[in-house]
Length: 275
Image 1 (cartoon, helix red, strand yellow):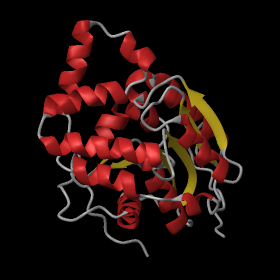
Image 2: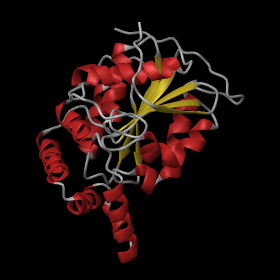
Image 3: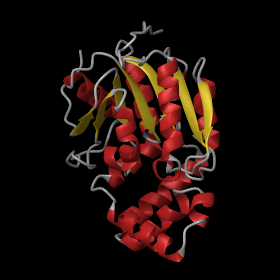
């Protein structure tokens, strides 16, 4: 049985179901906004915001992965989707993986971008530094840290002084109320045991010049999932800014190839089994 969701959400388009799971300190609009129109052309897209982001109030307690996975699934079911693919970005990767293993009767495919299964020693150091900036109250320092760690160097190096100043200002003004709880979850999740239990077509998209969640993590996710496909995107950790058209193309090509839509936008149901 699927519980009632507490998450605010965006619902767009028609056709086969596609559930979106966003990243820490992001939102559906912030992480998927540039490709939402392209996704909604082919799928019925349900995008829930995590507690403390976008349309959802901040949680009063620490976030728990199981509860969050159940909540995003419940949001899709409440919007009339019995089965659906899940696209997970960054923290959305462990959310999507846990959703797939807790609700195997509903999830038909996975597309996992810039993701990780657990935080290794280097990533925990980054998370601790991120939390230190979030708790400091120094929004300018936090924004500068974000610009040094989020976009890939090829993208950031092309920015003019004015472009960099605008990007820092945008980062400073976009931190959601629930940022600390979401980043704490990044540091605590561990879905390595979930990887081998995935029984649906899966594409892992590696953001190839990502210094935040490095390709080491993307490979670990892909190698752990039976039959997973792997693709590289010329991007740092912000594909929605750095390479949105290429990102959209990879997602649509994979879902089309694995029966999530056809030329008429109709669903071709896949049998979903679990171990």
